[in-house]
Amino acid sequence: MFVDDLDPLLFYKKIIIFAQLHLSIEGKIYVEVHEKYGEKIYELFIENDFKPEISMDMYGRNRMISAHW
Image (cartoon, rainbow, N blue to C red; front, top):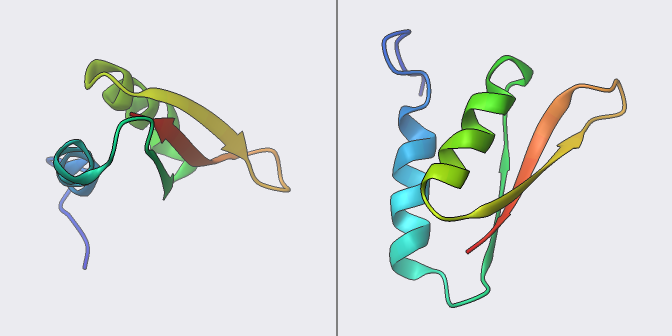
């Protein structure tokens, strides 16, 4: 399933809400991201009280975010 260009972060917003409701304290979540949106998704986690870290793939592109709750 794809989202339209109006809100490309829609699924990440939903994942964050789900994580806030279901992760235990000090829980961690991992998501794969499109390199184009890595920084925006990273900021989205920060805005929602997570402590994210961004990781690169073997080509040096931002492709994975892990975030502590």
